Image (cartoon, rainbow, N blue to C red):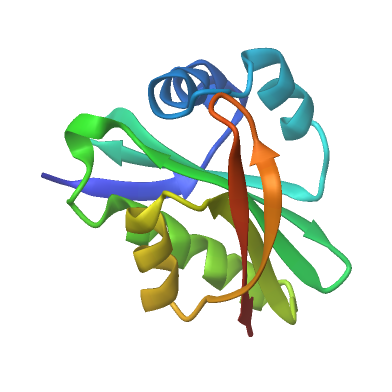
Length: 146
């Protein structure tokens, strides 16, 4: 299995929207993704497996901080280090852009993602009660100093 992580482009929006629908209870729409692509501070990466987009990650750069929006991998492709490779690419971008830290929030119940972030040096710094809907759940806030 050959996995390639590359910068996403507008042609990838349909695939990213599909991944959103498969992975999240409140997915971003193709329209929202397209609008984000047109803003300079946003960077998206896709993971391709044998030419098929199977995962993606997004980060928003503001001042000296990167804020990860989502990292998602289609269920059939999980457990193959794809999320790690996307996260590594985002961390590299943030370092190259001079960011002092990277932040994110994730569902409190998402222990698999939390484990990945912790292995990459992120630490829990807070909690936002009832942050998510469908179902209602708190968010864990995590940071990584660069």
